[in-house]
Amino acid sequence: MTAQASGRVLTVPNMISFTRLLGVPLFLYLFLVPHRYGWAVAVLALGGTSDWVDGFLARRLQQVSRLGELLDPLADRLYILATLIAFTVGGVVAWSFTAALLLRELLLIGCLAVLRRYGYGPLPVHYLGKTATFILLFGFPVLLLAPASTGAAPVAGPIGWALAWWGLALYWAAGVLYVVQTVRLVRAATTREAAQA
Image 1 (cartoon, rainbow, N blue to C red):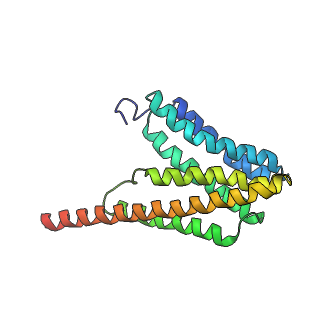
Image 2: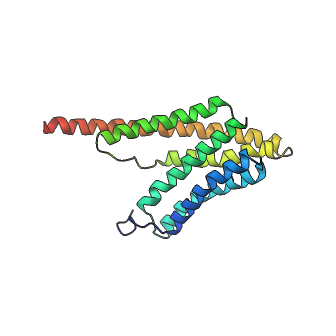
Image 3: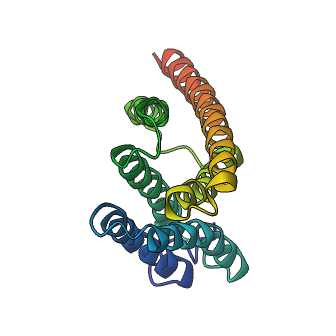
């Protein structure tokens, strides 16, 4: 991140991230109210694709910003949580799958609380976490194709579940890495405090 771009707000990548955020309530409405699964798939697919596009443009246009670094993972998490809630209510995924993903989020919230206690901010997003998020955001629309299209169901169901479980495994692997990083930072901080005492 460059110092010049760090405080910028109105950038192309940030506008894409804002648009992605607007897609979250739109997806929930399409899925839960009129049950327009085809349109819900389109919104999910667009949200997943734009996750890659905003990061690519930020680097390509040299418009990396602190706001963008916060917006991007926020949009990712909101998409995943909104999709989980909708899919669980709609019976697309089981509660156990939802609980596994939510438990990982609680783990990261705990890490963040510990880091703030020792004066650290959020950890940078790890490539493994980005990969897991991409797989989940790609797998969820494929999963939704099963109830949306009876013709696609025999293929979409198995592929969607394979992607979902793969994404979940990588999501937890990234979570373990964040815990390891948190422990190292806390040890460094306590060692520093002990040396100053």
